[in-house]
Length: 296
Image (cartoon, rainbow, N blue to C red; front, side, top):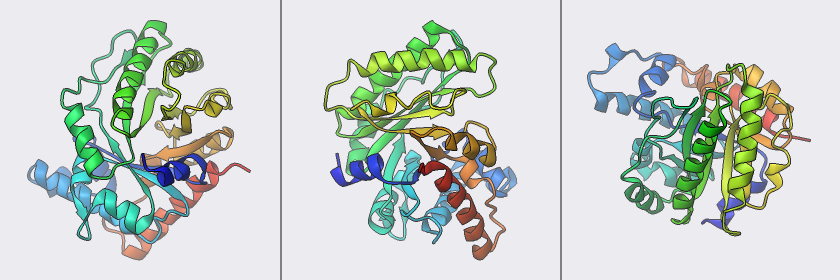
C-alpha cells in the first residue's frame, strides 16, 4: 500500500471522481455526453470514444488534486494511455490524484431483494495487473432493493470476502453495497446494512483497511460512528440517482461522508462544448461537490 496515497484518502479534503462506466453503462454515458450509437460502429470504437471523454475530463485544468482525492477507472481505461502514460500513472504523477479500479463484473439477478456481484473467475489476474499498473485500490458494487435481512447479509458477506482478497494484494477495496434510493423501506434496509457491516468489520485483521461507499442515508449521520472504526479509511457517498443539487444537499448533512459521484459529476458535459465551456461546466460541478464534501 502506498502510504502517501493512504494519507491523502484518509485525511485530505475533497472527493472521489467515479469515471468507471463499464461495457453495459458506456452507451448511456456516451449518450449523455452527446454521442449516439450512430457515431460508432463497434465496441472498440465505443470504448475509444469513452476514453477520449475521460481523457478530456482528467486532463482538464479544472480536474485537480486541490478538490479531487481519487478517481475510479474502468479496466480498459486503466490499460489505456493519456499523453504517453498509463492512466493511473498520469493521474498520480501529473495530477497527484489517487487511482482506483472497478473490479466487479456486474450484477446477478435479484434474489431475496438484493443483487449480488456476478462471479469473478479472473479476479486474481486482474488484481495482479492492478498492482503492476500502480493502482491504489478497487471498487466493487452490489445493490440492495429491499430490507431483506437474509439478502443484505449475503451482500455484505460477499463484499467483505472480495475485500479480503483485494487486501491480500496490498490494495485498498472500496466496499459498495448500494441501497436503491427509491425503495419504500430504505431506512430499514440501511439499519440492517449497518449492523451487517459492523459484524464483518469485527472479523477483519487489525491491519486491514477498507473504504465504504454507501447511499446517502435516510437518517443523516447514520454512518458517523462507524467512520471512526480503525479499519475504515473513509466513508464515501454515491449519488444514486439524485440530482447533483439534491445529492450535495444530503451530503452536507452527513459529517463523516465525502462524495464519490459519477453522473452527478459529469452530467453537464457535452462533446460539442468548446474547451472553455467544458472546463467551466466541469469546474462548476467539481466546486459544488467539493464544497458539499468539506465539513467545517
